Length: 205
Ligand SMILES: Nc1nc2c(ncn2[C@@H]2O[C@H](COP(=O)(O)OP(=O)(O)O)[C@@H](O)[C@H]2O)c(=O)[nH]1
Ligand SMILES: [Mg+2]
Image (cartoon, rainbow, N blue to C red):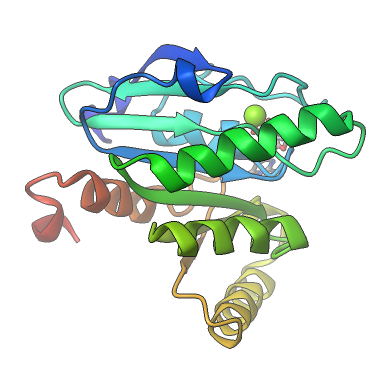
């Protein structure tokens, strides 16, 4: 149970850099390929059914959605990437908005990067990791849908991703996650607490 994240509520959407709200509390952004399980992870971490919309068909709206954890910070849902049938102009707009947000947002403390455990570290995931590195923003990866693999296979995949990150010179951290199984929820909360500067984060871990 986390009373803190349970109180999260939608605040606003931004489509262009000039729509971004003024910076105040710490922000943690959620990123990932379309269908990686980003909305499901947000809903699970906030213990809400429909805070962020989940679907089987990737959406076309390229919005940054801001959710407030009252008194603590913002969870910022970045548009999913890698959806093949998006027009080039929309991809370009996505690229500009995300890169602008990552490079210029001083309130941004970290990026939670969702990757389907069966398809980790695709080219666009690496691009996101590099953008964050260039912006000096730490990355924590959730290997989602861990329930789709047997325990041993999930563990092996976790270790392979850790190794690939090390070999790629990335300092990103990584964990297993499952929305229906609630695997890794506590671990992800600890990272959010840490990034948002929640006072008792150290004692809880
Ligand atoms: N088995 C399983 N399915 C998941 C999990 N997370 C998401 N899904 C499913 O994967 C699909 C895409 O999830 P969604 O959260 O909408 O992905 P998004 O596009 O990254 O926001 C949906 O059908 C979800 O029900 C998970 O941890 N386990
Ligand atoms: Mg989604």
